[in-house]
Length: 193
Ligand SMILES: [Zn+2]
Image (cartoon, rainbow, N blue to C red; front, side, top):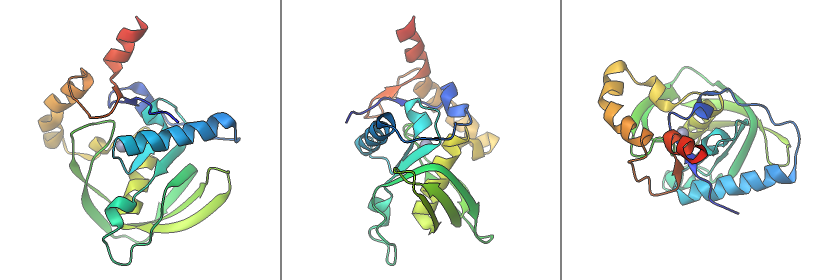
């Protein structure tokens, strides 16, 4: 397994609508293993394929470190979501702080549906359907956004976005030490040239 560099917020791959996965392959299994290693190395709870530069409808999650203390929360363990779909259950929404491995050092409150019904394929491409609430439901919605080309900062109002501008410029120019390997867009372009 290897730790892959994570692309940062202004990389165009994070703005693409990712492609469905149609078949299993040794390459897919290796990619999933690498994504878990990359996520754990960054102390993240979720990682979507576009974040390591692969425009595929795939994300991994291990939300347990954040739910272990909450009574009644089941242990989900590491999970793989391929070609996921979800819909909100009920009208109830909550606001919670989120961060993103592609936007190091930024945490902002985002309002999302509290409970969702999710359909997806696991790493063997077997279908599943399940209802998620609380933190795992939130992580799934954040990661799902990544495969739709959406970032959590898109939900912020223009005033909050203006306050973040200088931080985002630092991420963009590679000045931020994320504590894990990142591939800022400008640096990646410099490598090619
Ligand atoms: Zn993210």
